[in-house]
Image (cartoon, rainbow, N blue to C red):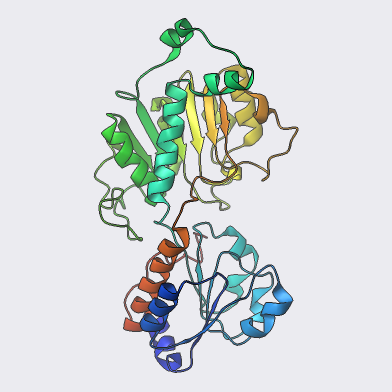
Length: 350
């Protein structure tokens, strides 16, 4: 971080920040204040690379949702990219780390409340079988009460296994605990339980105090065996691709429900479809699929106990405002030579 701070001190007087989003007056003022008066370049879109290239060639910092392809050849002065999103795989594919010493941060942590509520909503919908009357509504059909007397169950007393205990997983754990559920957590290093990333007050589980048990990646079979609900929040990396597949679904609890808000390819989708069709899994709530948009011929559209949404679990009013707050906080930290939040590890890819 001291190296990053030194770069800032050299460039503070004439630093240029390229922002590929529409800033409000307040956001612009916050960036100006935190940077010490940097020039802010606005009005560019990553989907118009030719128009943006002159600004790219002269910027020191970039704030964006998407990174243009072949970035290294277009932005030789670039020292730091802040992503307005949490996922970084598209930025890695664009070659961001081909620039020596480039810092990459993301907006992880702002999605915790929204996606945590989405996850609990999906779990509640399955437990209360809400997908059935919603489908029946389209047919103008009134379902008999007796069916729900046999199938609806409480979340209280059930076990949720959270695969990926970052900001989203931690807020899911907090909400699940309030519903009286047992929480199991899986993370890359289960002995490192604190969350060093962005975390608003009162949200999540920053110190890792909620889970009753912790698991590493090699122990996911046991987590599957113990979980009534399996929540997947993993980023997509070489290590997480098809992290859950036929082997894991084969040992799942009867009628277990899987929620995926990470990336579609973290789950072997063909194996998931087979487990759903065979009845081994009770259902799935999928906000991410392979590919996106989901192929119109995919069996997932028609499996009764599947709830599909088009990658919208993190969407909300005020999104850009919260993401900008993370960037501004990191800008202050960079200027002061303090450790930055949500710094992406070059070797891990997240």
